Length: 213
Picture 1 (cartoon, helix red, strand yellow):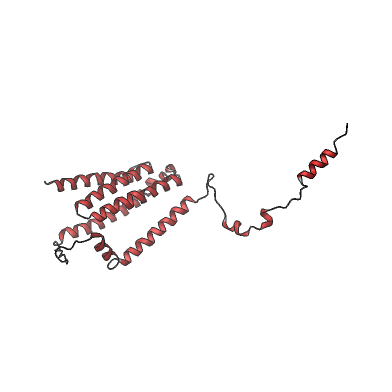
Picture 2 (cartoon, rainbow, N blue to C red; picture 1 turned 180 degrees about the vertical axis):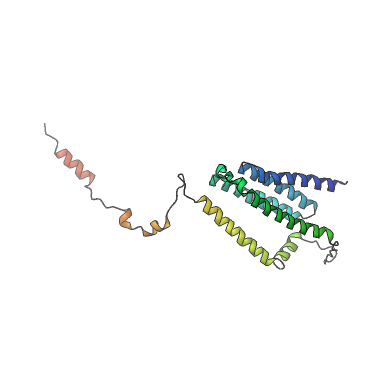
């Protein structure tokens, strides 16, 4: 076994352990941290496959931005895990059935790739010309996979809206503004004119009212 194979098995073992802990951890913050570990291991596997652009993108985008956002959302929504665990075993058969179907679908796709003959990739480039992974990936995304990319963008937008809706729910410590009430506001409701005597005149009047010795 060479060094590359040993690193692949090491990264894969840690990745499987981290993925298992993501769905079994009781604390959502710990689950998010295990997901960060899984991303790092997947980045290492991408690096072994000589896909440097995907590896760096996985670390910078998902670990550096998305997971930080996940942690902030988890801490802001203050998830009550006791309420989520209620009725777990009653829904377990349905969840297990759906998980088994998804596992069989993934296994069929993966095993189909192993059974197929290896495809020989011909590099269409002139000798001495460097090949850019990011350029080839961008061309493939915006030509052959344009519609799946747009669908993924819509799903991410829906997820962002759902996260905002969860954080803006009614809570005792949540300070919210009602835009409808702000629009209906009038100057008379916000400002009251009070007529007051000048200070100097009030002082003079008080001095005149003092008894003379």
